[in-house]
Length: 325
Image (cartoon, rainbow, N blue to C red; front, side):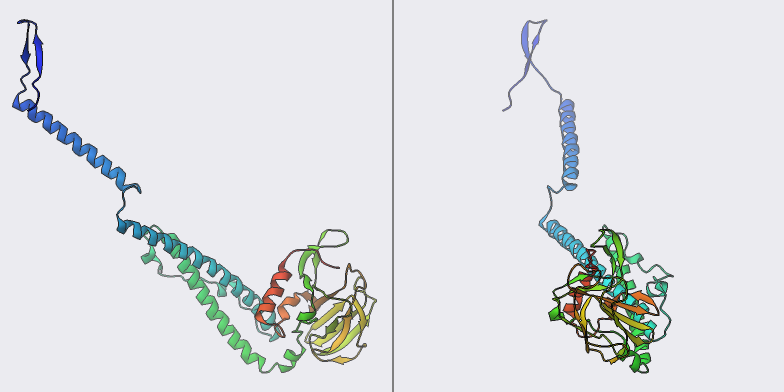
């Protein structure tokens, strides 16, 4: 039984029991009940908005969402790599293949045009990760269109190539030094550090580091136009006219294996690696001209190299290091 409560009555000078009416008892109980409900709801809302109270199903769903986001991030990185690879193919297509076969380059806006009209991505909105999903979908759509455009371009080039057999024989298409003879790809086409004055200058060719005396090969059929040391900086060098506006240059040679006016075939030994002219070590400096303009030789190594070897060469050539001449 509950203990009785008393109060001191000053009039009677005695303790009298506290009498609580039924209405008071009910109102106290009602107040307690309301307070309990308010605090209970507030506590529940607090717990529901934190990670302290998650059901096993909610935890599994959260893990699944986190995994989806991780996969989308990974997919976007892969898409970025594919975009880079396709951009490289498109560059070769516009600046080499279509030039070879006298076809007009495909405009950039045509290759990478988006999709107009009705909003294709409305159904993907309204979710916490909608931006990521929509961006990935857009990339896939544009990449798909680029592949279709490139495929059609290559079909067109294939038809043109059937009438360009002489051109294909003449185009410089192999490395001037065998893969197994190369110590390393010393420097590529682009801005590099000059080894003499340490300034950043345009390097118009590719440097292949190799031992003195390593054979140097003609990269395409043609006629030797020069085999001398009368060009500033190049030392002993050879120039081959391949026709169709293409000329290849081989500099810093130790000695020649051809003479001016001689016809050569792709793969013929024309000279040997040396260190003549403006050079800081034995290597071959190799350039290609098209209609008098020097262009990146890397775009012409579609013969004699495996995909893995070409990728290694492309990576080394892209490093902005110090050239050897």
